[in-house]
Structure formats: C-alpha cells, structure tokens
Image 1: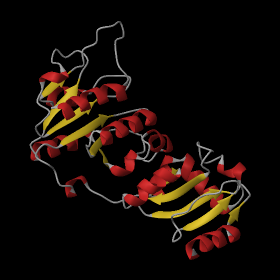
Image 2 (image 1 turned 135 degrees about the vertical axis):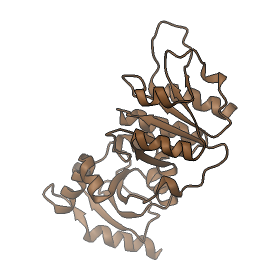
Image 3 (image 1 turned 30 degrees about the vertical axis):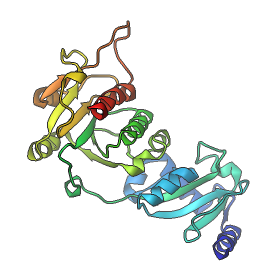
Image 4 (image 1 turned 90 degrees about the horizontal axis):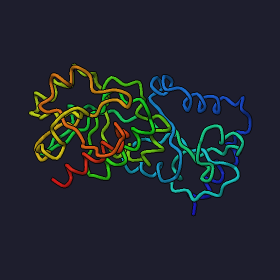
Length: 265
C-alpha cells in the first residue's frame, strides 16, 4: 500500500524529541491556552475515534501526531503525520493507551444559516462552569438525536480538551454556538420558539409541558439558578421533582432527564 509507505516515510523524517522543538511548543500552547486556540482557530483532538468523527463531520485535520512507541493503523495517508516521543506526547494527551492526537481547524458556521425543523429543540446552557459537564451533556444530546446547542455568557471553550474527551467526540456532530443572553431572545422570538427554563423552585413539572413544539430548553449554571433575564422572558419555568434529601441534581443528569422526556413525547 503506497499510502502506508508514504506515512512511514513522513514519520521517519518528522520526529519531535525535544521540548524545545518549535512545533512541540506550538502544540503545547494550543493544548494549554483557550485564548491561543481562539486566536489560531484550531484545537487538539485526542484518539483515533475522535479524529475519525472530526473527519466525517467535515472538519479539516491539519496534521496528526503519533507516539514513537505505538503501532497505529493509519487511515489518513493524505495528512501530514509527525512522530513524537512517548515522554512528550504524555504532556499533551490524557489517554496514553492510544498515543495519537491531531491539530484540527475550527469550522465556520452561523446559527442563522441552519435550517430549523418545525419541532426543533435547542438546548441553551447558561454560564456552564465545568467543561466535563458540558461534554457529558453533548454526549446525551447527540444520543437523543438533537443537534443545536447554544452556550450563553460562558468562559468555557467549546473545544476544551476536557469537553471533547467527556463528549466522546459528540461535540463534532453537533452545531454548538456561543451567544449573549440579550441576542438569544431576538432569535427565539423571530423563529417562534417557546422558552422553557429549569428552575428548582417551580411548581410546574418538566413532564407537564409540550416539548413536541419548537422550543428552547434552558439549563442554568452548576452553582446557581438561571439569571433574571431567563426568569422574566421564559414561557414557563420547570422543575424536576426530587423525593430524597438532596437539594439538587448534577447539571448533566438533570439535562439528560428532561431531554429524554422530549424524546418520549
């Protein structure tokens, strides 16, 4: 296979073995700094499964890095592949068993460009604080067959390595946008969305609302409630009944419960 030998040749001539290597410094900065990822419009993806999902979702893969201790099966003979020592790759990736990661370019897309279904459900995450929770939510959201998430007033980077890892690559199959809370209501009004916000003190149970219509489900931050703007502008505030002594649920769990009610409906 000519492709295999081309990859092997690339690996032999491109090997990173020093932390002072310019490429390694660049990659490490991409991994560590959200502001740098934003500036470069690139991010790091770890693992063959996730890299495959990127490729299938039409993300452009710039190059792939492989540990010199791993024997990878390559599907990407047309993409530059760089060998890197095991010691250095451990500074970039979490799952050492695979020993592979890629630099991927962000995809340009606008919320206004997307087609909306008559029964569209958009998930709104207001100021989420934990990348791992966001990734878990994305995984459930994709499993439910939904596609559009809007993150409001958050510092979390959509392509944070923790988010990618905990979403198991679901982030690449979704349309995820960042907006501020003022603009979002103009969008929902224009497109006839009902807005349902989760609020722990509400008397209305999440099973009592019509999730079959075009709607937005708003989930607040981990440590506090939804903000005043969602309190005032939502069509309904909804809650999940709790029967034990705990006073709250994990954000990804509560989101999953309501999403599956939408699927059931």
